[in-house]
Image (cartoon, rainbow, N blue to C red; front, side, top):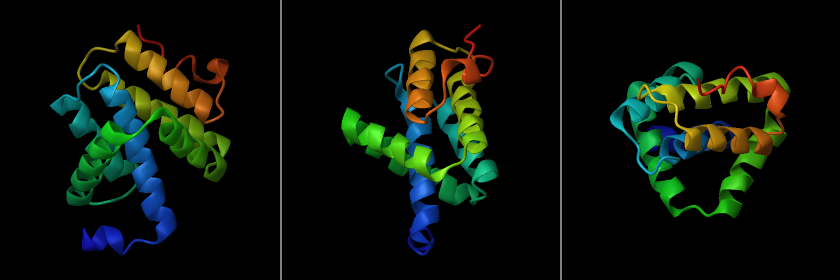
Length: 136
């Protein structure tokens, strides 16, 4: 926790926001399976460049944060990412969301809807994400 607290505020906020929206997709079907949790940790390790131990901690924090969040705070987090990330980076996040949804081998309709919702909050239109979130 001390190492996470020592990160600059911008990096810390980005990690928390990324983990939060990944967790939104994982929780969309009402449960977070170990495959989804592992995929989130993997994404944080490779995409955000943090250690495995930090990825586990950030994922756990995001799990608790999403269980307490309301729609307004969830939207505010996505909107924050929208304002700080460029269009290509926001589009790449949609692929990460899809990877979490597919982690357990089943891409559910409710997960697809959540990804489309988050993509819209990130300012990405349906045409731009069509290939990366096709549930078939």
